[in-house]
Length: 209
Image (cartoon, rainbow, N blue to C red):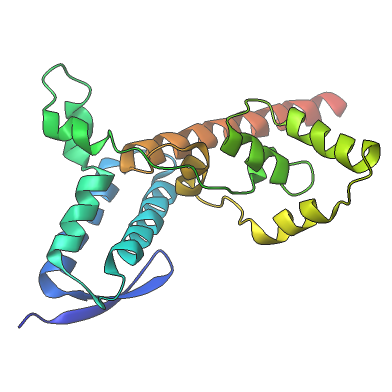
């Protein structure tokens, strides 16, 4: 009979058996090593842990203990660091490709990255596949002020729809697979955009002075 451990992953408590714990620990260590040179390493690995926790919750259902099979299934879904380099070559194996071909349905989130009030309209825009959220915003304005529709539906969406807080959430909002490769790409792009905004702000501040 295997020993069990109580762990906290992505803010959720799990009980995991000894073999599964060793496999998961090795996986997370390999991710830290692989993304160690990235400026957003901590955020990348943190978002990956959040996604792994979500997948564990989905797979466990009535089970109470994470086993080795659960961990290996999640690793196959998320992708492994050694597969990333393989995918950049013409000799990438079919197994590596399959790990990144998983399609996920879109989930509705509020988008804090492109919000005017609460991110409801930009979240709806991403969910409906509308490139520019301004059309959703205009629709709300017309319905409220033109057609006399109550603003209550917007407030309800604001209260009920969760905010996209992690890279995995933002990928799910767009209907993209929340795997290791996509999460890392999203975080790195956000870090670059943040750096550009800080540079622009600094240059504007110097110009004003």
